[in-house]
Length: 253
Image (cartoon, rainbow, N blue to C red; front, side):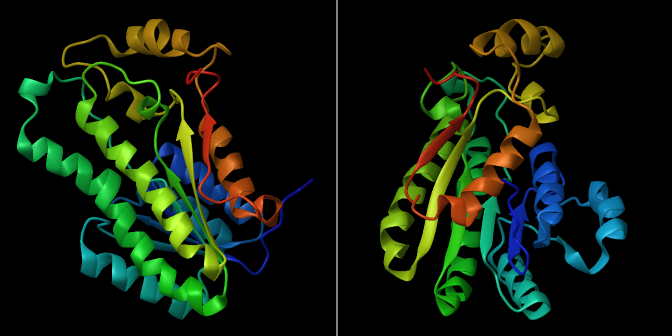
């Protein structure tokens, strides 16, 4: 069944990256109006030309309250509603022993992977409450269930995002706002190489560590994530809330 979101407005963060851009394109093809948020949006310019008024590209610092609130006001002013929020933005952590993790690194990872999810959710919810419905999907990581050594701050930040998802799901259920979480496995994006320790062979790690850790034998593709985000935001998933869905090729088993 082809999923159509005609008349809906979807906000996608981290829209300039591999997963985010795939999500933007998939939601546009479903008929949704899409607001694409990222601190770098150069990769979206061709889509902007192709989809014109259907795509609103906003340069936004997702860790700054004023920037996030201004972006959501602009989205609502442009399209008149906000139906879907897909929090795809995130950063990796180079494998680092806990004693070598600086407080600055810890704060930066939490700011982008967790605080940004809080800020965007807080900004979106009032509009969704006005409409009497909405869907929020947060992208976390399968590493929350199957940790890897040296990714301590990253895993903690994604674990916090999973917990926030469940807290908001129960809080917002009376308002018919569904909140779910998606755990990608090792994904074929530039970000994957950023998990390797300094000086490590990135391509060797991708092949012999990450790909071989996936029981189905392949890295997850950005389109796999985009397809799941589309489903979880649609009426086909209307009774899903507080769920954590693994799209990981079996990595979490």
